[in-house]
Image: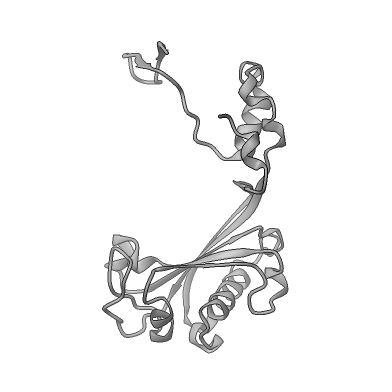
Length: 200
């Protein structure tokens, strides 16, 4: 290789064999659009064909239930989520779900993951609230909902349906706080043949 890279704010150049830009598909396409040098490389010729899907990340802080312990698969073995949710997620703090869950129109194409963040992150494990996150993919319809609390209610309904617990187990009245991030066309879209568009 023999590349020298100068990092802003550092006087010492770094010697390297390659430079790796770890960005999503749509960001890679935009970088190529704005950089004649990148656009001229043979490996980037088809980057304009890369696509992204919309993701909506919904973090819901809930009133705590009595602590359930002895759970598996996470950095922490207990949660303040309702006992029925803890039991449904006993083997793992992550549940991966496809589309068409619970007959909900918003989920006709959207898949999602449900996370028990108390079992995954130290700062939530030590907290006094239950923390559930639901990340939706191919979620354009959900991203169009402006009201964060409406999105949080949808996330709780989807999580309850996916986990096979009664909807009342994750009733919206349990919500203490909500954080919603809408990332439009920001997550790389992987489909049959998409690997051929990436550099070798």
